Length: 350
Image (tube, rainbow, N blue to C red; front, side, top):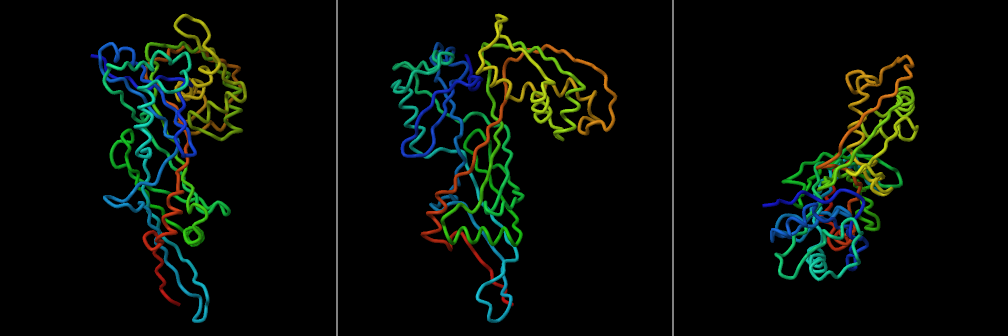
C-alpha cells in the first residue's frame, strides 16, 4: 500500500485566502496523491505555516505569556521605578485558527478553488466517493528562533526554548527569555500601552519536501580561487552562506536538468537553487580545499586556478527554509482586558 511521501518539492502551491485574517495559506499536494487515490487511501495536503501564533495556557482561555520584572525606586520621593531586569516566558504554536483547516479541506473536496498550477494539478484529485483527505503542516525538521524586544531600540535577546512533541503535529514551543534592564523596561512599557507587540520573534523553519517520481541532474562548476575570495569577504562559514557568497560572485555555476535531460523551468530552478541540497553538495566539494577542520577558512591559500566539476542527482527528500514572524496581536487585546494575568512587577523598594 502506498504511503504519503511529503509535499511535492518546487515553487507550485495552491493559495487559499483565509477569511478575515491578514494571511493567505499556501497548500501543497502530497507527491504520491495519484497513487494514494488509486489505492482508495486518503490523499494528503500540506499547508505552509504563514505565521506563528501564541499558544493558550493548558485548559485555560488565557494566552501562554508571562512577564516578570524586578524594579526598585531610586529614592523615597521618586515618581517612577527603575527596572533591574526580568524574565519572560511564552509558548508558540504553528496550529491554525480552528475553523481554517475545515474550511480549506471543504474547498479542496468541492474543488472550490482556482485551477492549480499545471505541474501539481493532477495531485489535487479528490473524488466524491474517496476517503476524506488530510490537511497537515509541511514537515518541519528544525526551527531556529531569534527574539528582539522594543523595535525602536533593537534590543536582541537570547531565547531558550524546548519543543513539546513533534514540530510536525502542531507542537508548542516554550520559550524562556532573560531580559536586561533596558529590555525589561521596553517590554513592560509595550504591555502597559498595548499598542505594539512586546517582542518580535522570528522563526526560520527548515521544511521538508519530496521530489516524488521526478529526479534532477545537477552539473556543478566551482572556481576555488573566486569562492575563497568571496568567502573571505563575506565571512560566512556555513554551507548556505558559502553557497550564497559563491553564487553572488559567480564562483559557483550550475545547470539543472530533468530525467529527460531537458533544462527545468526558471521557477523550479530558482526553488532548487534556494534549497538546502545544492549548498550541501558544494560544501562537501570544497570543505577540505578551503577550510581548516571544515569550520574555519584557511588563513593563507595560494591561488591554484582550480575549477572543480561535479554531477549529482537530486531525488527524494529535499529541505528548504522559510522565515515567519510570530503573531502577538491577540496578546495586545488580552492585556487590555486583564494585564495582571500577563505582567508581574516586583518592587523591592529603595
